Image 1 (cartoon, rainbow, N blue to C red):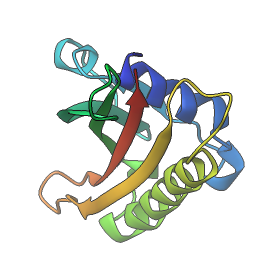
Image 2: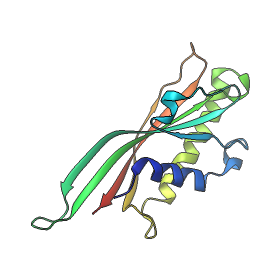
Image 3: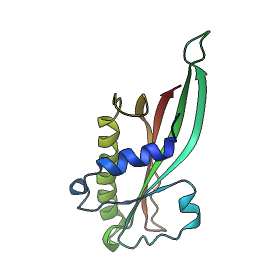
Length: 145
């Protein structure tokens, strides 16, 4: 079994195309890292990756094979160019589209260390008060072992 968070970070960072997101590559950070760091979000993009659930179940009855399903949240944040929230939202939409493109391209890769990567749900958490445009995409990462 692999470390689900590191797997997602590697898939995203190795496949990110900055040209699809206004020529900006975000900072990728894992659960635990962002709890202790101060990030400078002035004109910056951040992708936070954290686990929200894990499920184990027998894969084959009577055998010793298990399926592990991790639910991982990929949270995209931007304070793009000190613009209005609506301008930041347009940039955020490009970030989320890039994440979805990468996830769909890696749904099931025979060379990957996971069996299946699927988008589950998307939610907008932007705020006029903070001026930060945020969106979270939850994905399901399946492994057998």
